[in-house]
Image (tube, rainbow, N blue to C red):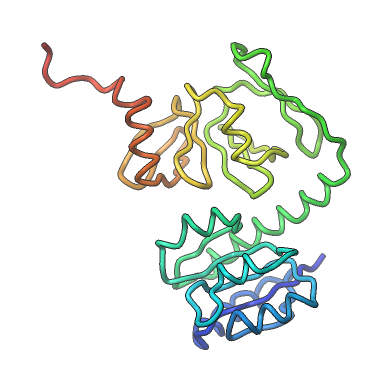
Length: 251
């Protein structure tokens, strides 16, 4: 199975480097390499593409404006020198965000995530729609969810963290991972807030599995590591951690 892709970057050196990396991935078919967003827009208006690898800061039409302009949106992986664009890119449902210089390993990881998403989307289109949330049993310590292999039961505390995959989510336990056919946004509304906390646009964690909290990362049980944003860190501190911190001075 091959997947079509498009490269968009106004910097020739960066453009060539990305193309070199993508040519090493046998499952990809590069249909065009564009030097600006307008050129890419013209191709995308007439050609179906699975994945777009795009810079953000480009003249006339930025990578984000390119994504916004498309009625039928392929999966976007942004590759940029500016980390401050991350939050906005995830708000636009970009699949991944890579800060330059983009290594082959990092591009391969993003590509595998995109391919997994494409294949899941194909499988989901064949599944019946069914609501399996536990709204009437909020006190239960377990939940059911639908994945491609069927309906699975899982205890809340077995979940270590959850990663967004656009319309789907990837749930990690100590020994396994499951793809849930629910977006991270909708999971956040249904999971108990006393146990689960949003720490990033892309991640929800189980606070019972926190080992160490730093300014930019959360270390979880079983050596899992996820990023945390400044605003989500403050919210996590106020909601859960501050209440449990041992006091230096007693009244």
